Image 1 (tube, one colour):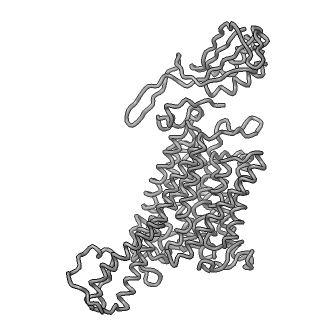
Image 2 (image 1 turned 180 degrees about the vertical axis):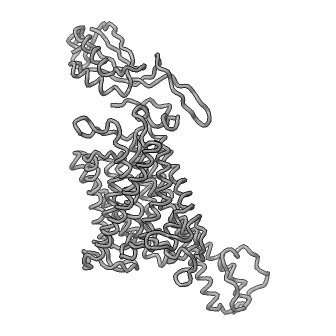
Image 3 (image 1 turned 30 degrees about the vertical axis):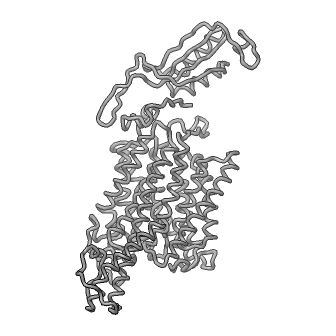
Length: 113
Length: 495
């Protein structure tokens, strides 16, 4: 079992989700995050003063998958999120020790679904 | 209301105080105790208890008081219409996304400034200056033409004869008409929201309020050819609302719809507004302001019966329209949509704007109900036509501006509040009035749409109308203004 954490551009949310669903990965958690990487920031101004903002809005997916779904899921995310420009994001694949379904109490790969 | 009575009583007392020395002096033909003289100290002479009041002095005092009361009414109504700008800002920003809020608020705020300046510069003159059937030609600039307002009718001497029927000072007339012009301009900002370039909007607004609005306004309120034809538009369903609507329609055709509004298969992707609280409060503010918009257009208190009648027709139409729009939205969407409820109220108010002084309360109820039904159907239709209107302004102002104008031809009752309009179709007047109304709708529509289209096209060619797609996605707040509206909130999921 693996946990895929993907940071992508917010406007790519719908594309990534659709691509994941098409790859048969339908369960995920999505949250708002801000972060920085290679993408430069932008300048904001307020009442005569300027500031550089380089913590940029991103969206984070957390997807628990069984091992055989890791490759399809990663490919789907890349297909949905890639624009070719700096700031497309990153995907982390971390080992998942245990997964328990709240409703049934089931554990393990069956619980991942 | 209490304040109004209180202020009037206070003024009456001040006037008597100023008149007292004049009455005591017993000289016929003494100077008019104008309000300005109330401050001048009278000689310390006790007035003779049996001093007779001359008819002339009484008439002068009464006429001065009349002017004062009428001016008070016109200005307070104008302040209410000004207050509608808050309503527009709230409805528009509430129906659009958070990332564009600064831009929408900026457009709404600056548009009134633009309207104030361009209407002062030339708008007033083109609209109300003496001229020909098409436009004003005298007293064009800075409302500086010869004028002896508040003189009315035969006694009026000046170049703004079209509006000499109301006995208030020139600046009261000017200010009242100015806030109406501002309302027309702000209609456009909602339809082009979320993708228009700020400078493009500013340029267009100057031209709309300075030239387009006054010209069509001249045709109907300025003594132009539509007035001669017998067309009636009491508070501006055509003059204000449909003009704003046509101008916006021309703009949105050239501007295109928002990115992501229509899916590849042509179906509509709903783009949610970010604050329903703002939309609702804005809707109520607009409703409140309309009580200046409609009853204020009498530009005089009279014996009070007209303004009371108009207040009730206005409110009744709004209420029935809400019921109509809620019902239709409930049927179409399976659940009643708050934004359609609010749009319904506004539609009813727009629709009753032309007929409010010419129809009975029962007719107002029917007009409102139809308006509420129309607005929901129009919203769906504009989406089907691929015309993206984020706030429904085309459905509210254009469609119901036209309907309200035609409704005069259907429901008018001759002289119901004193104006001889002739009877509408449903009251035995045949189609005469309806034909005049239809002619007005067509003339104003053809002119406004065509010229607006030309102006928008010119702006598009010179500076472009639309922001880049990247800017549209990251939000116009950053792109146009460099500031976010809600920098502390993290709410940027774009589903």
